[in-house]
Each structure stands twice: as C-alpha cells, then as structure tokens.
Length: 203
Image (cartoon, rainbow, N blue to C red):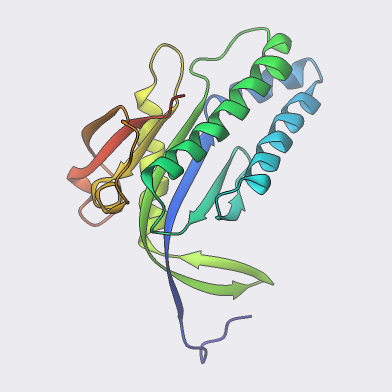
C-alpha cells in the first residue's frame, strides 16, 4: 500500500471512459422477465473483447455498465477508434441477439458513449488495488457524460475527445466523421467553454 513517505509514481496515459446507454431501462425490463443472465452475457462478451484485443491497454476499472481503459498516449488515431469501434460492434451485436428480443419496450438510444482525454496520472496502491488520480480521468468522465446528448437515429455511438488530446495523436490514415464542439464540464478548471471534438464511432 502506498504510504506518505513513498515518492509519487507519475505516468502519462490516454484515458477512455465508456458507458452503455439506457442501461438502467434495459436492466429494469430484464428484471421484470427474470432474464438478467442475458445482460450478464453481454458484459462478459465485452470483457472478452477487451482482454483479447491486440492493442495494448490497461483495463483499469469496471463501473457496472462501463469501463475505464488506459491507453499509451502515443496510440495512433486509427488504432484508437478502430478499437472503440470493435467494442461498439460487440455490444450492439450481443444486444440485438441476446437482449432486444426479451425487452417489452425498446430503449432509446442504444449504443455506447465515450469520453477521452490524456495527461499525467498519479499511480498508487490502496486496499491492495492499483488506483489512478488525475485531471485526465475527471475530464474523460465529464466528456462521456456530455456525449450522451449526441445520439442520432436512436444510436448513441459517439466519442467526445478533448481538443488537445485529439490533435496530439499520431495522424490517421482513415477519415473520421468529426465536428468541433464546445461543452460545459462542471467542476473542471476551464470547463465552462471546453473545446473538444465529437467523433462518430462507426464501421
């Protein structure tokens, strides 16, 4: 366990936080028909995609309906968004196969929302677990929350990525559907007019 005499361990990471849209509505519907096992199976499938993915990243934390992932800060844009696209495709396929037939009312929207930022994090050990502290995690979490408002045609597969993070990534070979956004991030210094890019996570 980290103690106050230990030197801080500082590491630079690209933080991705993603969340499943309408998860509370889906869970309540599955509870009524006593088929929570279908939701469990979807989460297991996502976990397997994350574990088996060829791109190196750390699965930092599972939050009930989403994950915090830590990527190397020099990852290419192509590789990053292809990874997010594969996660999205895994979820949508399993949702449509395992979950949607069991729902009385189809939720709106469906899909995943992502928040992305990069920066220095403090790494420490607490309660026999590795924990990270830093602005990039807070910003990514707030961006993910803002991405919920970008749904289109019933799907919410959008990522909001801070402007500095997006422009610092290695150039891409693939063209992405991007648009500049200005959002309000509460409890973030400079968050009242925060510059970011919205990226549609697509095939």
